[in-house]
Image (cartoon, rainbow, N blue to C red; front, side):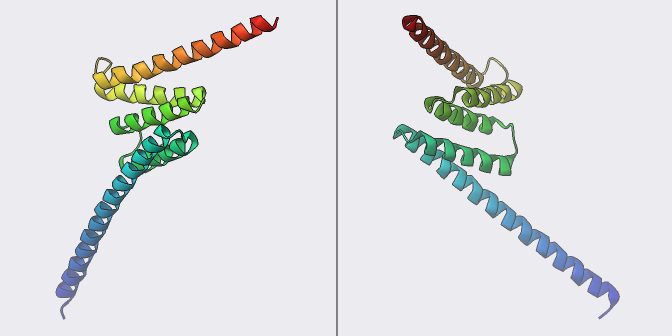
Length: 148
């Protein structure tokens, strides 16, 4: 076989390997997307059932999988950040919750603008967190006053 023919066969073989790798990568991405959805759905169900630690764990996994496929700071990641923040807030972790709400708000402001409905929703979560913090602080102050 001539050198040119052998070089062409090697080239064709490499092209086939690249095509197969691309197909595998696409299939893997689809499976990761499905798994992310399952984690997110399971998190929502466990949060509703009151198993907040499990919900937080599942939302974290969903967010991690999303970031593996799509990268960080995407509009869809903002939704997962809010869901995770809400689960953390319900579990009593206001500080960690605030970090996730702020991340979601920053993402949505950057990609959608401040006036967009989804950005407004992220802002409402920040307000809800602040209100909850204010109520907790007021209750703590009241108990300190009663104890004096």
